[in-house]
Amino acid sequence: MSKSVKTYLKTAAKDYRSRSVNPPVVRASTILFKTMQELRKHQKDIAKKKDVEFWDYGRQGTQTTVQLQKLLRGLEEAYQVFLTPTGFAAVALSIMSICRPGDEILISDGVYRPTQKITDDLLKEFKVRAVWYNPNDFQDFKNKVTRKTKLIYVENPGSNTFEMNDLGKIVSLAKSKNIFTAIDNTWATAYFFKPLKLGFDISITSATKYYSGHSDVMAGTVAVNKKAYDKVWWYNHVSGYRLSADDAYLVIRGLRTLDIRLEKHQENAKKIINFLKNQKKIYKILYPYKTSSREFKLLKKYYSGASGLLSLIIKSKSKNSVYKFVNSLELFGIGYSWGGFESLAVYTDPVELGVRRYFKLEKNEHLVRLHIGLEDPKDLIEDLKKSLKFIK
Ligand SMILES: *Cc1c(COP(=O)(O)O)cnc(C)c1O
Image (cartoon, rainbow, N blue to C red; front, top):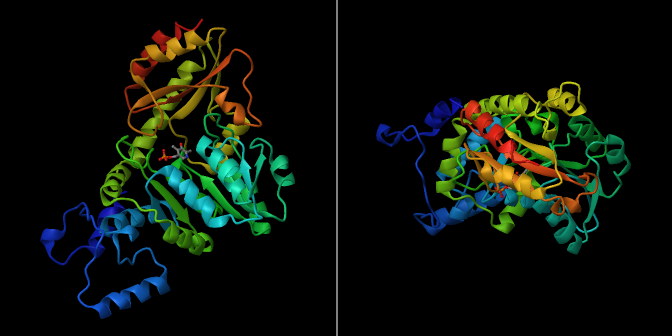
């Protein structure tokens, strides 16, 4: 991330006193023009250039958000990156930019639950049909591509359940049929995997998670190639998404240590898995770690690493004892979200997962999601060891 200092200097003020190593936080709604003529000229330029780096009103951005966009363009190897107030707004922006009445969206079973909601519930009202495919089965995906498929939407690996798609095959098929492709890449981030380089048109990240990394801000990013740019620009323009300068600043701060943190999350996750895989009370670990598995092979094929989020399947006749396991963890907080510095645990109810078409939990199987934070892994293992005893 050190490149950012040089990038910043190139555009920095002439006066050295304004060249603090960090960009200023510029909060703005109104931007002042000297004359009406100057205002009109900028208005025309902005409409013509459709460039997110020209703005005449705070909704379109400020010097701070542009610094973040520059950093992310480099990291994602993108044509441009749009910023949204939450990660989910980035999902909504992507889908609404592409899908129109009469279209089909082909979507992997296993996407984030609110993403399921927007496709199944809202899009239906706009006459866009959601078609779900099994992420473990490329043939099933292939069979469901039709002449109406406008957007292929993937989340990889699957939310909570970690199914791995064969991303290269999906992208090639989409390209041969001129279908737009979007991926929610929040789990790996562009540090471990660059979707646009593989050929995706849109790469979505909840910056609330690893990009910011400290659980103190919400933001989303939509990185696009040239093909998707105009569509996303237009929808963004008419829908009013924006990221505040203060939040953009916090994401910039987080990005400075993205590489260091992710390497550590990965290393800690490996150590925890090495411990957990030998525990009788853990029936299964959902994470691409077994070298002989399909998931691991796909990870190696496309990713340079894996992050700190995984799930456990625990077999027990007593759901309360699994709750007790989670409740008695001292270093793992109980709560939503992830990607911050801290470890987290959350029990996900299979009934809630009932909306899934291909993932099933058998009777007496329980799913607990863990985010492995930056704590000392020895302490985390001790904590897990002590709490596993409660599972009956
Ligand atoms: C958290 C999350 C989102 C939504 O991000 P928010 O910033 O919480 O709105 C989207 N996709 C995935 C995979 C996520 O984990």
